[in-house]
Length: 209
Image (cartoon, rainbow, N blue to C red; front, side, top):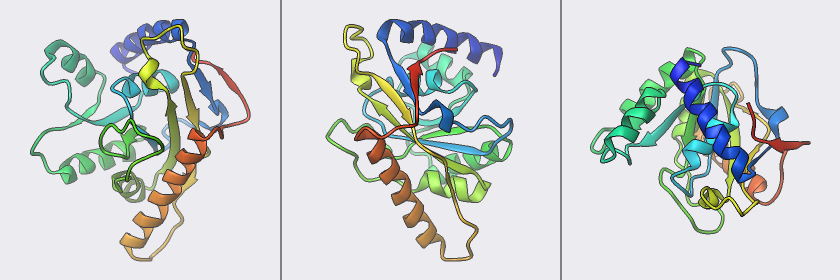
C-alpha cells in the first residue's frame, strides 16, 4: 500500500467500526503477494467504493466512472488512491487496457460489473469487462456482494456487510472469446446472486485492519 492509501483506509475503518459492518468470507480472499486478481462486485450506492477499500487488507485499484469530478477535493483524494476513472466520452477500451496492464503488474483491480448503480432487487445486466480483463491478464475472478451500503451513514442499522465468494479461475481455452466472456460473466453474476441471497464463506468478522 502507498502511505496515502494506508492512511485513508485507516480513517475509513474507524467509521466502519461505528457502523457495525461485517466482512464475511474473509478466508476466500487470495493473499499471495502479486496475485493477479479481478474483484467483481455489485453496485447500489456511492459508498460501495469505500466498503471495498475497507474489506481488502491490500491496496486495490477500482475502475469507476468519474462521478465526483464536481467535488474537486474528493476527486483528488480518490485519484490519489490509485483509482482508474472512466471519463465521459472516453472509450471504455482505453480504460480496460490500463486495467489489464495494472493486473499484469500484480495490482488487484476492483470492477462494478453492472456499469452503473442499481438499487433494485437482485442485479441488473453485467458488463463483460471484468472477465475480459481477467482473461487477458491471466487473473482470478473474485465475486463480492456488498450488502445494504445505503445504510452507510445509518449507524443504528446493523445489517451492512461485504461478502466474499470463492475465486473463479478461467480455464485455459482456445474457444471463441465471445463464449468465454458469456460463460464467466454469468458465472460471476450467479456467484454474487448467491452471496446476496445469504451465501458466504465459513466465517465472518467485523471489518478491521
